Amino acid sequence: MIERVDVAADVVIVGAGIVGAACARALARAGARVTVLDRVAAASATSAHGEGNLLVSDKGPGPELELAKVSLRRWAHLADELADELGPLFPSIEHEAKGGLVVVTSADGLDGLRGFAEAQRAAGVEAVEVTAEQARELEPDLAPGVVGAVYYPQDAQVQPVAAAEALLASARRAGAVVRTEVEVTGPLLGDGGRLTGVATTRGEVSAGAVVVAAGPWSAEVAERLGARIAVRPRRGMVLVTTPMRQRVRHKVYDGDYFAATQSAGAELQTSAVIESTRGGTVLIGSSREQVGFDDRLSTQVLAQLARRAVAVFPFLARTNVMRSYLGFRPYMPDHLPVIGPDPALPGLWFATGHEGAGVGLAPATGDLLAAGMLGLAAAVDPRPYAVDRPTLRPRVAHGEALA
Image (cartoon, rainbow, N blue to C red; front, side, top):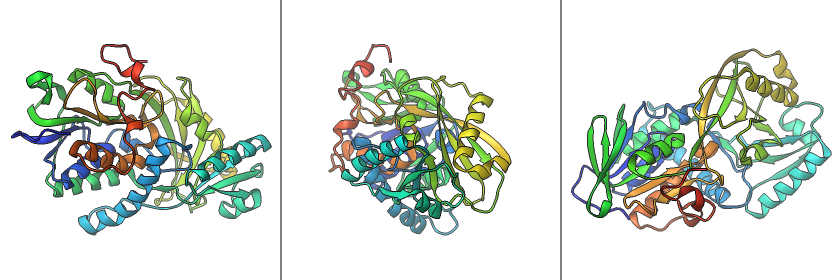
């Protein structure tokens, strides 16, 4: 639990993306004095370069799926809560329960998808197998090679920047302070080596606890504070078409997507992920590769995304691309986020490592972190997300090289 002391804040959160925003809101509404710091503008890094996915369809049975189920329910309520709280002049978070459709083009792929969906259903996911004809009723423009699909009515979407800004605005209304263009440079240490705040480019900020929620930059921030965590950046790219009449009704992706999200290799992984936006554009992803923070767009990657998308929706071959962009996901070696206290540095907590699921898992992450820090009951078992869990212990130990 945090120690409440006479300082500038009970909690300093490093990172004003959607995960940091959700943590700030949960803590502030529970009565904690919260200060959020970010070296750039709020929600301008990873949160600004994602698609706003709220998915259960890409998660197998286990801790991540449990967190996702809780979070999807929270998002459905948050959409109304934030609209009521912030009023009609604040931009909508564009919550849309559009559903997801996973398609396959081979008999082997269909067998694999059936087995995966069966395991998900046993874990409480709505996964409805549909025939090729039924899939075309859901998506009339699907390629003729699609032989079957699974429909996931729980899948949804938000506009990630609007959602992060709304969570921060709500946190401010509960008393939180958000300071941008402020970079953390080192720790403030108290008796017994406890972390009691941070030194920044704009002075010191004292606190009873510090939360690192800096996405793919969390390892850098942790090292500055005297800790280690095995978060690495995983680059992804997206193509954006020119606006058109809506021809993609759901979030549609091919059966390779789950394997790509779970891959541990540094090499390029691509799969087709296609969806429309309210503005009429179509977003085409997704790619994953570990190349550090190399922010150069790759024509090879973009070409692969285009080919895979056309294999699902042939009409896209005749569609103009308006722009492309890239971002960095916070990758963890065991594909689970880290939510909880550092075992070796008292006063340090983490909320990071969500890779491409940060938007979807943000509300449940904020609630779980607040429950741990304030000694409240948690909606899910916190142990699978612990910093010193068995699957991370060799990589997280202080003084050891990161994997």
